[in-house]
Length: 570
Image 1 (cartoon, rainbow, N blue to C red):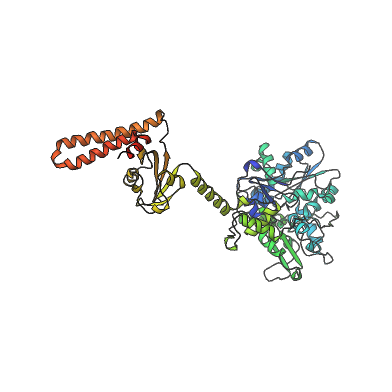
Image 2: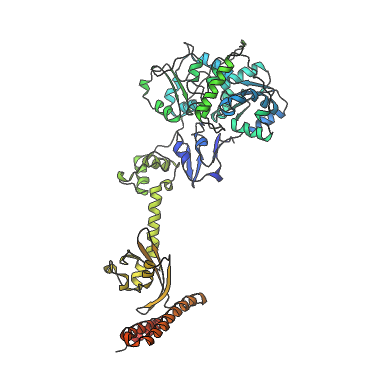
């Protein structure tokens, strides 16, 4: 089974949906929280690889294939994309061919050699079409999603294919390994009509990995040249936006209305969305990567785009000053493009509405179109859900609503009593278990909590810097355990109550009772000492306080049955 050109390392996929957001053709299927590339929908532009923050998207490796080709002993030729200068730097460009020869390549040539002849063929007056076909991602997109524009594709092969054919002529029986920044080149080399032209495609990322394995550093390699046989002209400018037009001496400045050079997904998609009837361009150079191939998905340096672009231009100027060569060898540059439209299942309005209703968007006012799911609109996401490309759980607002509903459900069904108070200890809300425990209803909302239970714990939370208060209390013949805590930012207090009237205490629970009893006993003793000292002055107050403390201690051990018996006394 053929492995996908771009695929997901599932262990790294973290539910961020960024790949869904940036994919220009919605070729990412999310299932079980994992974002998988659908190969039959993918145009191999590699945008998801470049944009994935977790490096979960990756390009299939051909490094072992290249190593095997070299170890087989066959004459192996490297076709190096002109964007190599942007990655490895203009200062070390002259050492790059030596580094490749140290890996075992017999000949090292520049793909710009094929680019020069592709340009010449593309801009001949008799050549049909207007869309340049150097970028395989552009070709893939047109064939799959804009088949009505296939007649506008200039029927000329890409520089990689042209150069591969040239190298096979120069070195009969050789194997050709293309090295560049592009994921789509790997798929292009697999096209049936190009079989046997390119034997392996390496990205710059793979090449750097190979250099590291062999401990090869460009600064330690000697200077040497490429083995080009043709005059390249300005073809070394191919990897930057407008480079092909420049190579063909086609003016493409801001004042031209029939010549256009565009790079980057957004601008390319905008152009493709233009009404076909208004398509009156003579030449359109399109590159899916912003700024050109110098920002390809397998560019492995940390330089910014401006530095990369300047390195390309400086290197091209330097090499143009060298003596020219002119080999007369010609090859077939013609290409054919076919409709490869991927049929997606039709989605009805009724199906979309079902998903919208399920995710709480039955009213258009709730369609936030926030884009957090990766789709531009809620309707696009709903359509993807119907097609099996997305999950309802990708919607943040839907998941937040579910979480809230589950929280509310837990509060409603828990056997523990729960009460919420405001900063003045007035009752804001209470669940059914609390109402049942303390024989009340919503009619007491707004009353002070002391109307139902001992408010001592809440008062401590208000006046002392503590985060929780726990105690065992008894009231209305009910012995209950309470855990109280503050919500400081919300200026609210939460109480959680458990009825322990029929609970047989274990050692841990007895510790809570004992600690509270000793606390009250100490208060009682201290009060009696004070009472003895100031009996006359505090007689009435002391008697009341002593009675309260004593009753509190008694209540801790009073059973519900005792309380019921007391209530029955006339």
